[in-house]
Image (tube, rainbow, N blue to C red; front, side, top):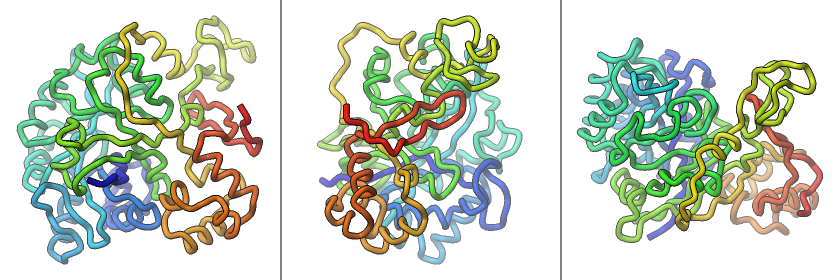
Amino acid sequence: MKEYFADLHVHIGRTAKGRAVKITGSRTLTLQNILRYSGEPKGLHMTGVIDCHSPEVIQEIEELIGTGELMELEDGGFQHHNGLVLIPGSELEIYDENCKGPIHVLAYFPDLAALKSFSAWLSERVTNIHLSSQRIYAGGQELQREVKSLGGLFIPAHIFTPFKSLYGKGVRNSLAEVFLPGMIDAVELGLSSNTEMANSITELHDYPFLTNSDAHSLAKIAREYNSITMESPSFKELGMALRNEEGRGIAANYGLDPLLGKYYETTCSDCSTIVPDKGEECPECGHTRKIRGVKHRIEDLSGEAIPPARPPYIPQVPLEYIPGLGPKTMEKLLNHFGTEMDILHFVPKVKLAEATTEPLADSIHKARIGRLAIHAGGGGKYGKVSRQNNNQ
């Protein structure tokens, strides 16, 4: 058994032919670029690409298999020639009669046959099969049953985001209002929460937590990721890890400090000032409408049951967030040490200082152990890392 780094929520911006898939995604976010970039410089072992239902993406996968760049694994997934394993998936929006608001979910499939079957089924239930995150004109439970019939995994996405998520707008109190609880394989936390926060919700005690990037550009790949104990990276092993079978499991979640997330604090929807959750008016502009912060929504949902033990949640500050670490310095670090995973986890502080400067090495080290001062985000604006060290 070994631990493998996996980011299971990466979008495709454009197909090889230039067709838009995730409209807000970068034009350089193509399948081939994702496969190359996730291996180096990112240093991942497994990447979940969640726009693989698109017919042109399926065609690209088939072409890459034909050229030998991808190999379909016996245990599910596709191995790139650089060693990275692709887990194909689809992100969809549910808004059925049981929902209070739209909910985004992730579905993953073991092989090309299952992926093509799902795409054909989905094409009759969305407006545009070529696009990402389409609203599906089917119930949440119907979607769950279809995914499971194809041997897939079903995971609610970024479950606390104020917009288009399970607890953000989708349900009043419980996931059982919309979904079949026994057909959920895991939940994705999102950028404004962590394990301690989510573990306070009793009904989530039965599910493993995932931390993924929801990347809309190459640079954002692996801003959150998971360390997963498996025999080898494959779809079958991933499923076993989510079920904690035979020594497999989530070893650690590497996620943003929730303060860096866009929706941690409650903010005024007009001027973006952080405001009290219970206040009536914004003290800055007098506006009465708010974007409610994730921390306050979780407080509403928290129960009194003793939370189960969980893998460690390791606060993650991506290298690009660290003040003073620009593109040239990043290139220098990668040339010295190989991948971002090496820099973030394995290179000794003294070696970082030799390659850059003592203050920058100190910042990278403090990022590893959650000791950087952070200004909280909210209302759709990310938090920021301060140059001042957090000595608490």
